[in-house]
Length: 246
Image (cartoon, rainbow, N blue to C red; front, side, top):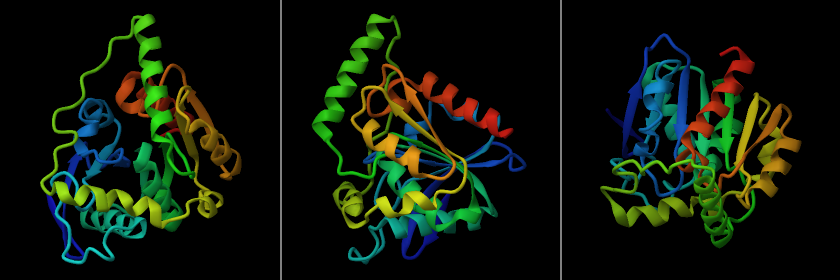
């Protein structure tokens, strides 16, 4: 569906029965809602799953104001507006990599709306992209040695209707200091980070400082666990929800 918010038109996909708990997904940076295609059938058995292409990415269109629209505060409000449109008051959250940054802002700014949050590859520090790539490569080698076959990337994962907007949309990360909001994440939080992801250093700090957080290290996984090893990412996520009784 298309949802009009503050001058932008957001592409939104919903799966699962409306009577099930809502789950809001935040995909990795430069990626679209297609990121989650492999996992949606199983997630929809348990949740009402909501996916949003952030403004300017995927099938979503930007507004006419480039100065104010690309901020984490705006992305968080966009998510609230979509949830309101769908009649969803509270939701669980699952995010991956870059998407964990706006997801943290959404959770901290809207605590009454968030039941729990699974924040994968969480990091409040500047991204070390070369180290992320090196860690991801090494993790892939170890999985191959263990006989774990790679899963093809979902089709359309980086296809954007407005490709010139991707860069400005991603630079929202440069405008927001995430460190002060970690202590505001009072809901149950799962930090799921790969054993070969340099973000693990920051993830440990976040897990130690968020009031109700725990860390799960995804073995032989690099920076994008949900894409690299979806079965492990999903089983870890579902075990977290089993512990909550979701």
